Length: 496
Image (tube, rainbow, N blue to C red; front, side, top):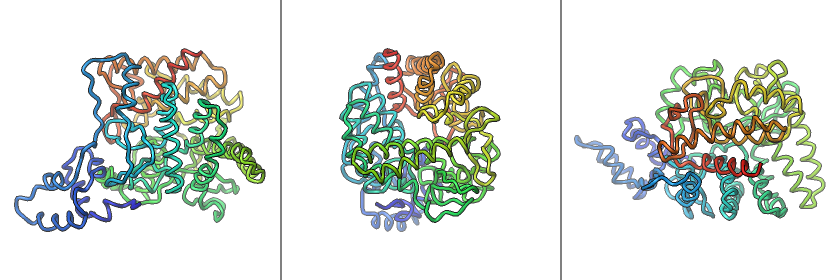
């Protein structure tokens, strides 16, 4: 698998296409499938571009296939929202039994998010699975898990998405949560037995380099505090412009800090691309410093992975491994309290390695300790108060308290955090707040659907008369995780 297919093999052509802006969306060229051998295309390009009337866009369109570049959903008449979503599951289903261009092959069918996102995405797929569970589509839930396992076994991790240029980073590690969701559905403990090796491999990916770390330093996705404690961070192996946002990155890199590209890519591994959460000055992307931070969400998810490995080790009768992972999970739980809990503000924060203190950013990822049951009652009560006062609006939960124009900032409400918010509040008995989160966001989704016939990638939580925006591309419709969370929340409403 060649992670730099387009950069290395058609480097000059790719650079010219992205800089010329012949496509409105830079992702178009990364998704294109060559119609002829790469050497042949390169040779033709070198010859033809010398002519006076050379048309770059016409050349690209005659040498690459763009079929399926965008997922379009059309309805002649508007169906009730849940009926619409049931039809969408089939319309968003794809297969990739062989590699085409940058698209990685996968052994099973999968659900794509929609719009410009026409490939398998890692953390999206967990939230899609929530809806598949509500729809009774257990086979597709199993397919998603099998595809993740295949990628972990063959690549060593689940890439950000199933394309070669994402082979330098992952996304939030949700595989263990996916297993829990399938177990909740089937009650079959063999799930943990069968995927124990896969869980171990994913854990090894996130912990790579930990053995050689010195205090106060970091290596790939692990860092060691000045006290010698181990935490994790998001990271990307590459320090170059992202192919899918090539020109944007080059332009943003002007007057930017050290390792700008790697910091940008590392934020993409979090799924939060982009947010004031990552900016040293809280405002400008040029000050991005993802690499200096240990993130509360990632460390909570890795605690869950460790506890799942305790369970799978026990079921596989591996007592030594069971004890090892139990110690790791207990240690991480202590570290989450030690480094991420901010007693002054009564909430969790990310931890800044170089400054040896929590960051100032207020963001919704503080829900993870409540979602996974790591917070004590007093911490949960304080976080719930913080969430209700600063993050809950009439259209749902926002991601941060800052408005910067970035899509993971105010005023946008994203599906994953509505589910995390609802479940977190339910876990600690804040039922009224849970219902308010659910009702505010679902009403927003229903309003936009009534007005447009679409389910969107994100929603405006403050001004429910407008559609959400911000970020590097227009708001997309489809949309996998919105469909999943909406169905699951309404199933939960019916059950509660």
